[in-house]
Length: 397
Image 1 (spheres, helix red, strand yellow):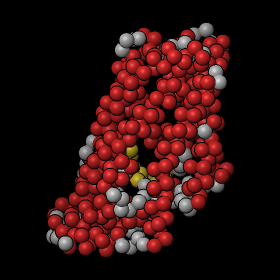
Image 2: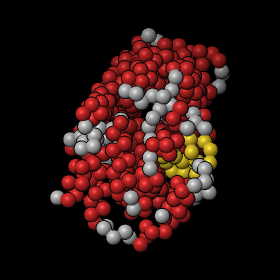
Image 3: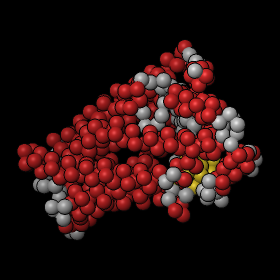
């Protein structure tokens, strides 16, 4: 009863218009998932039905006599055309709606500039990935689904490795967190948890939006601890410690590697479905679209359309897997920072863009993190179970 009363006391701090706005923003996202899928399917259908994808392939074949290079050249106009077709939807969901809910701090020019950077990255990554995938299809026509999944899992691993060093700085400025109590606390927790803490970075997320975030990103030599300026400016020392201890938990518990392994299994299922479904669809409509077979780069819109539907269906499964990791990191963070009230109060601050108290089915389907109510209740339960501060926490303060 004491735990529930303490939990309710926190949850009741979000009332009236603030709670209604938070719920409306997050619940609107449910419909965005459906409409976003339909917009993507329409875009891919248009590229196939109008022959645009086939024309991109024809151009790439004229541009180079090297067959292996054709998918890489095709990737550039394909990525640009895809982005342009769905741009009105991207503009509404990524800029207009965010402004409407007062979550966006970026100007239109700034937003467009970062969209352009993202498109450039998509072209480069798409060229590499399509070169590998279509090489696999040509060389292993009976097992390409298996090797294709392995290749995508490898790309995911490499992306996790290089993103903190080469990708993230394209969007934000990273600098060493200044010396002071916050840094000292993070360093102490990191060392106690055996997490590399030679560098702790602060990045300027506030130039884009008002969201609080932090991470321990990278793999091996690129591991780095980062937090954004929104967290530093909006949170107390106790709240910041709770967040950073949670992020350290992801590293200590090996969640990055676990997630890559889980994604590899999801990729395997997805590629197997492509292997089974794409040839049958091409047998029916491929001639109309100008797509020869599954080894033709012009099939990319069909692959993408099937993948979008597959990942929408898989979303509750993926959310559950990620949510389980987040819950583990929450428990680790509570035991490391020993700041249950800081953890609870920062969970409430996240309610600006996360529904605080969803139903069970709602949380299962749509939440890739535990809801605010779940997290506050966990914090209050931990507080009740640890009335005397554990000795392991005292060196961290």
